[in-house]
Length: 476
Image 1: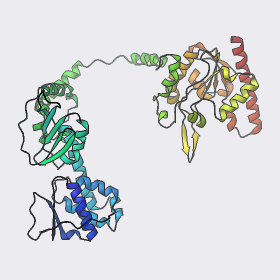
Image 2 (image 1 turned 30 degrees about the vertical axis):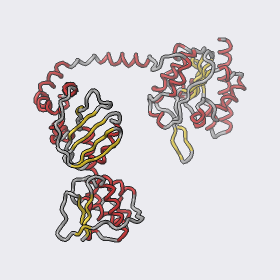
Image 3 (image 1 turned 60 degrees about the vertical axis):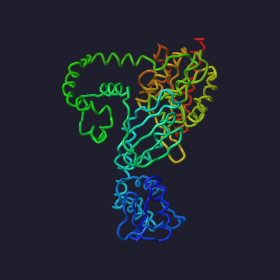
Image 4 (image 1 turned 90 degrees about the vertical axis):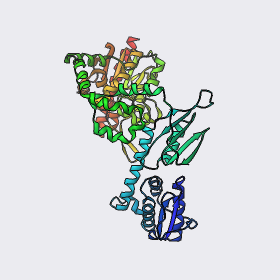
């Protein structure tokens, strides 16, 4: 029976090298016993170096799991890992078999080690041990982990406290970080650490952030087990905080402010609807729109598309939202609908370059279908959120007339997108008291399958744009 003794420092690398060697040699698990230098060999165990390692291919997920499980405190962890590795030779799909009992046990061990690492990161408490004349500040801590988590967790502390020297001492392996270098040592006694003046401030802060109304003792002890309390200065305050929690919660309830009348919420909502989320110079408005995250549409769109055109334009054209091309290019009215608008505007005598063109909604809403992105109409919430930016653009440009193309633009500017065909060609009151001319959206014309109906709608659209050109010419 071969017996492998693994070092307590560098355990993960040593186990991997030995496991590869035995796997290459074809040594079955029942012919090997494993242990570290604290465990004596069995009666029939013969010390045996691992055979030379050869090329071994195993799933990456097993390597990741093994690199964590080797730090568990179970003496059988090495044997369990090798037994499962032996089975993986002929059945690599085992790593995805949730019903396999060996894998389930290893996964529980992995979870326990990671939990222990998390506790270490949360509950290590340093005290300063260096002198004022030292070139680098120096700190030390005593910690008692459940598993052998010092070595795999040391890099976390090295990254976080790279500008100081520190050491974390444990009953098993201790880690030292000095002048930017890590080293590990075995079996250090518990040191007598000096008092730390900052601990009193930390305990004061801990007492003040404690919320007695949300106290759940079992949940707290699950996240902060009592075994760690003796090395945490704030833990001394916990029994008193628990005992006084009911009385403090009653005091908080009695001191809580009364609810405002229901009409107050309605007034505040009206005020919020009249205020713009953005206030600033005209040249900063596009940048503010690009940074908008007010609704979920920003998560899938390529970019926000602000309006463009003269900031003193007499005419503002408002469409629904950017299309696929607008989303990619970052400019409004450059896709098929925009090109149709340009064509009809030229026929109507409307100068597109003299108008400020924008959309009611600034991000492209779509549904992916293979390589295509199919347009979806914005809902009321999305229109409401983007109305802030549309109103900011209107306030900056202050046109003499706004043309609302389509139901979405009509809703954003007048509060209603219904009965569009009945309302088109008419002037309604919009934001800032500016008249709004309701008309069709060119995308609606592109979608009409009947050629005659499309021609009739095109004539109606052209007539509306002619009216817009006449109104702005007279206003100018």
